[in-house]
Image (cartoon, rainbow, N blue to C red; front, side):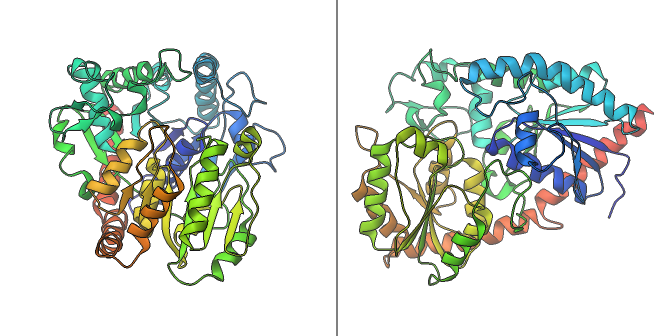
Length: 467
């Protein structure tokens, strides 16, 4: 193994499960390659990650990474809504306190040599510049979505904005296939008073931040994707050095360090052990989506009528908000949270009904499990299209005019994926093939592994030149 122990990389993550997971996986991979890595998020998320710590802001270390949080001015918060207000506070207090953390690490003889951050925290670039530390953006969505935002921010925005009022209209962007407005990231079509109305501005700030960084020959972005999946899109953004470093093969330990929710590991794993191979429908819509009560009734009815065993995840906050009451049955297990990597890797799981968040999309590919896509917001609609049209490892559910995934449509999709028909067989074979492609890219010596090693070498050369 190369010696990158002179590199002290500070990985900073937005405090949401969908950001923590890919950021932690990157941090651990960098540590396994020999770098020293500190991981930081806000205090409230840190205390949920490490509930046994003696103080909420205590530094914690495992055998690979150190964890040291920064304060966002409201350390007891567990609800980050409305987003616009939370983000404003996070930026105001986080910029100051993350800067203090960099000083603290320097005073402990652990000076930071590079700060890596996902796209929702562009203000971290100012912290890096103030301390003369290289800054690197980490894109945790597909390159296809990066390209859409890139053409909106750096190209002709009218190619998108002139169409957003018509969901059936087609958007044509350089180097990309035609895209329906209904497949664009939801931030383009949300109401102006939506709580996420600031996101497009944050994405614009992200592009500004990465282009101001002079460490690299041209703007450099680490991407949680791999070349075989998006080989046709990568060359369309030649102004940016897109370094494909994902996905990261999961550790199947009982509990991931980054879990903000506590799974009941023994109960559902024992239930899965008792099911026949490739028969279980696994249903989960991630850490943020709130599924309305009526929609959950349709989902459970569709699952029951399909006649297959199912594992259904409905978070506690979703149950409380929508007054949803669900109980496990002879043919069904209902839980509040689970270790998704372990579930998808279990021999009994034959289908994944998913919101198509990018983490879940990649995890499905890693496990070789076919998917029924029921996207909710953000990049998920494009991710679902990629599953159906690019990897061809799943199908997108058709939503009714009222915006509901109806029971009969869910049953139809499950039959398409898990049945005995020709298309089901094709999807399952594609899933097996992509499982091998993913593992080839992510494993030792694979394309993503080599790209990450090359990044560390480049960072080391830059240090040598500056010294």
